Image 1 (cartoon, rainbow, N blue to C red):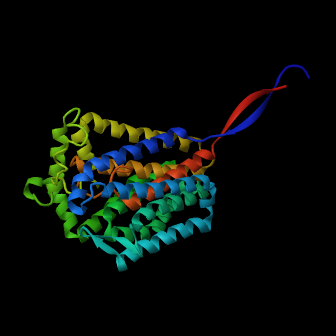
Image 2 (cartoon, one colour; image 1 turned 30 degrees about the horizontal axis):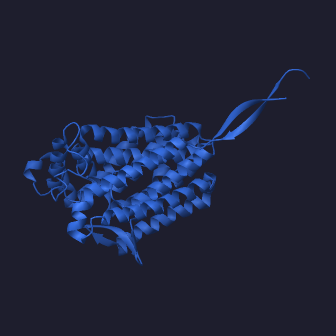
Image 3 (spheres, rainbow, N blue to C red; image 1 turned 180 degrees about the vertical axis):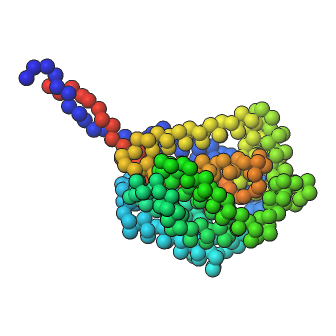
Length: 376
């Protein structure tokens, strides 16, 4: 046989761009966390590095979780019994918070097991993504039927209810993840108008059950009439406004010196804008946009529907959390206590966010690139 024949060769893929973005966000987050929290840590604990050390420790644990999740073939989580176990385990932990949870800052959201304190609601986010991705991958045609969508929501409703009892903001994020995953999987978008109304009604019921939630809405609408409830938001807006275009410089914030309460948590973006200016704030937003773009690339090229749905779930989680956090700190919506991923201080959140990144990287490892090479 004359001439050169071409043989097809399969090459495995790994998304190094996503890995770089994750590492960069983690490094930036640690630098900003130290800048924001050093004064309060020194005042409260006599150690300016208190929050930094704890965040670095949790980041290392999360990176270990990310590596493990990335090396486990993601198809393992598609197994019916595995996905059900993950969902059931998360439900039991969230239910345990209601019975024996620890109170901190006026909220009961933590479980204490020995020396370890954690938020089960963060585990629930990962569990819902895995559970829902497994369900959707087994019924790609039935999802066009509105009855199937309602059946899925009925399955997830118990977990949403136990989360919302003590942590409405997380319940909103979990409900949003579910809706967005089904929205992407379903070819009929008209169904989601009704579903959206149901989610809004679900949230309204839980808002009315707790007076402090109604007070937050009134403080958002009329901050001048609720100086105590709107204090954190107003101080955060002062921080953003005083930063100008390029900021006061790293470490030079005034508002972090006790004016913005718990600045290292959900209001860390306001101090970023004060120290790095509008330019720094836009750069942070662009980093998250790049992160979401990499998720979209991986989801579009995933080897199967389950892998694509896993990535869509993580994409939905990160997108919702970033949008809600930025909306809160700019007073575009009532204060909900949602942290900024990878940057805000938070142990359980950091560990399971990085575990989610491991799931996405596992899906990226399953992508096969078909290349042609000449053979003699």
